[in-house]
Image (cartoon, rainbow, N blue to C red; front, side, top):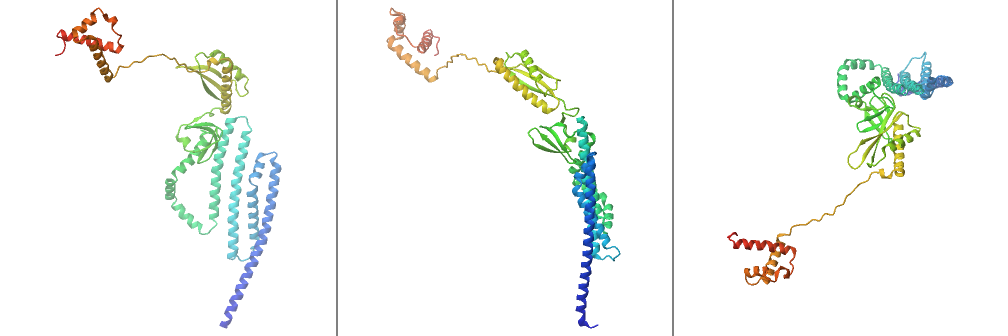
Length: 438
């Protein structure tokens, strides 16, 4: 062979390989496309049949609703895979054929997984709608909760199986799976330690579904929050409060902590409200007015409507009213209605019964002792005044005090000077008698 002709032969062979590959791909493409169209047509017919049968059976209608998109995808991919298999039938499969067929096979497995997961949703919805149409609310909530939990468990299993099936299509996956199973014990221990809180919530969610501790629609008090159970999953529970907040609690909270379930044995509850009134409040008339208000209400269930004096300490009476209703929502509305009605009646018929604050005012005269400086100043004034009136000695002072002029002729002294003067006179007499300090 002439060496100069080698490049020409290589180019020719490359062109031929490209032409063959292109022809093969075009053949596979149009046959796969034809198969996809056939698959879509089959799915369309199946969905039409399910919708027609859905008027008699709810399950068929739900299957058609939830499985429509997944069904079309699965049907198209399955038809395409079948068409590709027909295109390479009878030919020697090269690497291009293997890649195309392997890719389509993985897509078919994933689409089938999606369709199976959609089927579980259709089954759950069918069960829930069937139970909610019954009159037993408690059983309906219980089945709804269990259906939600079981659907999530089955959905996780289906997705895991689909991923494993897609991985197992690779030839080297068998060896990897063998090694994985050999080290499964160690891996499970490590995974359990790493995801301890997550696994505890998952097991708690399964426990809540099987033990029926809480159900969707139950009114519970968790800690300081009160609300209605809106959703229960494997990992968390959604609590809807009265102000439309959503509190997400881990499932393990309801297995590790005490909580109140107001609708565990039924939805009927009893609520209370308190009124602070004056001691002159007409209790008997209030009972009559309460009976009239609840009798005219459409949300009172007729079981209980009582009024009692709960406390009588201080300046007011504490009146407690107990009301019953078919569910917590009705009881809350009834409490508001009764409170407004009684307040209006008290304002109109017995205003003296409204709470008031009594105040008694006393006139108290408070006197204070003079300061030491004031006492000293008053003493100096008294001494100066006595000297000016009594004369040169104490005898004259005493005689002047008992003489003809008499105390009535002396000018009046202020009260504080008279008090000091009296004390000073006694001190002088004590000194004359030899009793005073030396």
